[in-house]
Length: 251
Ligand SMILES: Nc1nc2c(ncn2[C@@H]2O[C@H](COP(=O)(O)OP(=O)(O)OP(=O)(O)O)[C@@H](O)[C@H]2O)c(=O)[nH]1
Ligand SMILES: [Mg+2]
Image (cartoon, rainbow, N blue to C red):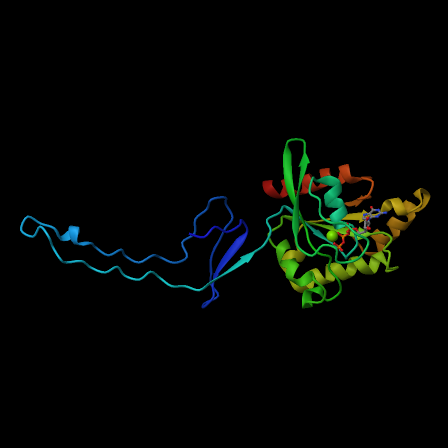
């Protein structure tokens, strides 16, 4: 028996067929049948032969080469450019403590955070930032996009004032485009948009700047205006995330 983490898919390496997927705690999946045990001499004992010499050998077990692929199991997956503030948001709204720094590709591995709202919890996945052509393997993104496959919804974090001087409108479209190129099912997942780093904008310009962005990207869903640094708007965002994941559960 081999213990594997939740979220692991098991493949037959020869046929590429999926054998099973570990989605429940303590689930058991049979990947290769053991052989039949041999019979020892006591099995052949009888009234006329009290010390039989006969035994039968066991048969060999099935041999199979398998591949294991793990993807994180989360309700909501974070999407966004490097430095957008994904890990900062997880730190702000959950007790997880992923590393945050002012350079791109701080996050190198997916990690999870549990977000609570009244008595309920949802799990959020932080993945490394995506860049243009991530779906073709540029940057770190590609390997991690698959981790979003099992999420119920995606939360796109958009930096309103990127330190590299890039345009938030372009950045939004690049990420959405990479997602669609990578996997249409992923691109069709329910989406939330959080425009982050609102604290960097002068209060009297916030509405004007964000309205321009939302209009240019033709975003139809609900938009949250947040600061992952000081918590601004994060309560509303949490409520929005619960509303979305619950609505999907009931559907
Ligand atoms: N002013 C301000 N800075 C922020 C905010 N959110 C994040 N930052 C800063 O932006 C930088 C990047 O934040 P991270 O949380 O590491 O960004 P990330 O999206 O996880 O980045 P990668 O893991 O590299 O993809 C850090 O210097 C943060 O302190 C915010 O709301 N306001
Ligand atoms: Mg990060």
